[in-house]
Amino acid sequence: MNARPAHQINVHADSKISIRVAAVLPVKIIRLWHCSTAFFIIIFFYSPPVQGQNHEPEIIIQHKDSLIGHQIDVWDVCRYILGKRESPYNDSIAIKKGRVYVSPVPALGYSIQSSFFAGAEANITFCTDEPRQTNLSTMLINGEYSLKQQFTLQFESNVWTRNNKIDLVGDIRFYKYPSVTYGMGTHTTLADADPLDYTYLRVYQVAAKQFLPDLLCGIGYNLDYHYDIEDFGSLPGTETDIKKYDGGARSTISSGISLNMVYDARRNNNNPQGGWYGDVIIRPNLTILGSSHNWQLVYADFRKYFRLPGKSHNIISFWNYYWITIGHAPYLDLPATSWDTYENSARGYIQDRYKGPALIYFESEYRFSILNDGLLGGVVFTNFQSYSSGPSNTFTTVFPAVGTGLRIKVNKHSNTNACIDYAWGVKGANGVFFNLGEVF
Picture 1: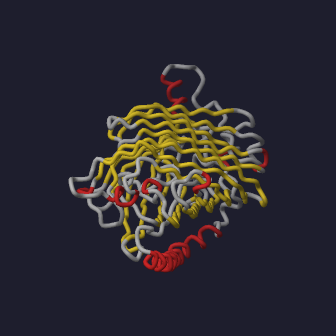
Picture 2: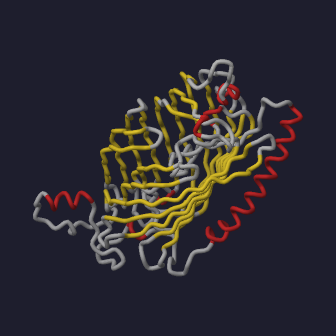
Picture 3: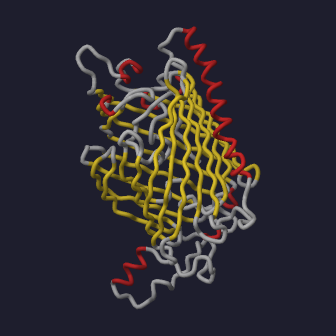
């Protein structure tokens, strides 16, 4: 289950303009929804005959499976290099009930928004019951510090109880985050860069109960608290977009109860091998719960995975999400580039490059094996993002990107990869991107 969304009506305009925008924006969204989801309606509900079912076989496969054969990961390679007698091919890759699989990775790299950074990351995978009947549970712990003096600490969890009866999803983060924003709309340039500094605390917790196979409904609490906000970009006699929008507020709070409905036919969200995923969130943020303003968000996230070719372990995947706010969402809670729930979207662009009251996003990625033992793989991908902007809050501009990347198996049991990608956007946008576990 995923979160963090927005679509908004401009409360700085007078009431007549606000009413007109409220009427126009849903019409535009509905039109774009029709165009972008027609394709998804087909792929979500169609599965090639070769799949047979949505369960992902890598959870229970032994080495005798001819599709996988002998599987190794970086720890097998290390043992082999150190001269241990046992073959790196001896271990079964079957997930076992009650066993915990930890994939620690030192983080040393570079990103567009952080420059060079160092830290550590660990992916923890386990199954609370028999893997044939229960999805893999995952936890991600991450801490990083960058040359831009950004400090981030994250703990994300997705825990499934026996037979997928209950799904507990948590997302707790603390950021000390000097960064850059480029203002509202789709016509900003790199020259509009506005340096910011702020501290961010996120606390999301959702509990969902299964009502039908793979279909869950639940409720959650969500807090986004930005404080010690400093804007360094305004020149004498001018105002930046964030000051115009939030009136120079030093802190903002978005606190709300969410209603969640999720369909998850994936069995391993570290590296899905089939099935599809859908998540719809409605979250009213209310002043009686501590919010700076009353406002609402709607977030809809859809993903589909196919094997291509059908008898291989190569995967073609699709991702489509809609992020809408209604009311006065704080500037730092508006839809923006690479601010999806897990900050994985829009590879090719710097974080917060574009921002608006509503966002429509599409991505497709093809994942393929390079070595038969699973140690190395590769990907090619493309993505598109569009934001509502202008007085009529219409979607007029699409920002595409393309990229490729390398996959290195860090844990063959949980099928977890270290991901290193390079992507190119428009107007000279490009960069390298790292992740532990597949991007989506």
